[in-house]
Image 1 (spheres, rainbow, N blue to C red):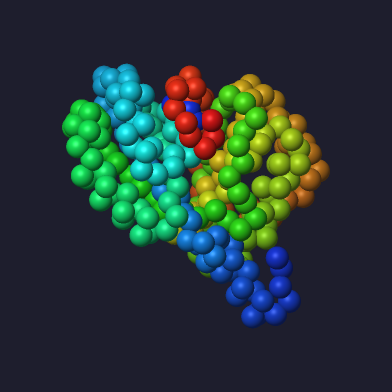
Image 2: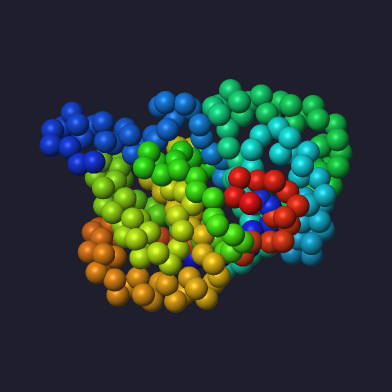
Length: 252
């Protein structure tokens, strides 16, 4: 489980032909219609430099958000490697991302005030390109809270095999009502056959209590077919940081 501490503001078809349409729809999501995708970025920071890294980010991240939309920025609290920040960026298409990257490379203030100061603190950088699945959209949480990123490594074969069970499983937890679904993402570039589910909870304790209730809910139990398709499940959990009040992002 990945407990994220928010750093700041912010189809079942009866024929094989119909099944191929379901696979394409679930697997690629909105990119077929408008090209929108999201980039997941993960940085592992030197422990002794985390506070300095975050302070500099708070002061200068506006230089980055001037170029493209930030969905959210978190500090990992529980679930694996610590001293890690995780952020999601939205792009209209790949041409848009290329334009943004070129502009950032030429942005002298961004390079001098942020990159040159923070880059030495970063031990490792990772990224993934993901799409929202068609039945999901980014939902804004009602207030400050904690976020949980659940990552599922699925069996090869694609969403035509497990897409319906996955949607049923997610919706069963939504219906219980203890957690709010923020978005469901399918990986396009990075480790394949991966699906990320981002949840919002009022607090870590309310999440724990809700999970106990959910495990006894008939709707959740009935959606258990998903386990037949999951190879690995990993969860990261984080608490939203007060900096969310200072930087404008999609989830703030």
